[in-house]
Length: 134
Image (cartoon, rainbow, N blue to C red; front, top):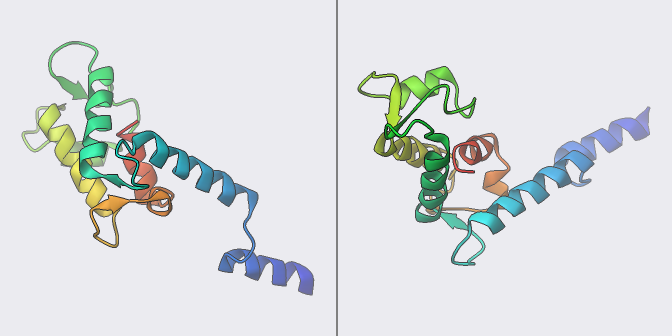
């Protein structure tokens, strides 16, 4: 019993890396490697916008210049989609989509240094950002 408690406490404190944590860390590091076009070990908004623009183009199947909630394929909640749609037309233009991505980027950057590293991508907000950029 004491060993299990100690192990759990150490794992929570981050002293012992659990397999799921290391898998998440690898995924986050892979995201940085894929998005980091200037090879500085971090991802800035310009790099995120490039990837988000590519995704927008892939999702926008009907050639109307917008994506609707269905085309987003579950990448954002209905609430977040509605928030990102200020004109309430049920679609996001590329500008509206990139504005949403920009807000998500800022939310995923708690140290406000204008870049994201693997640790920040591993956060809940970082993972949400990855869903709309890859």
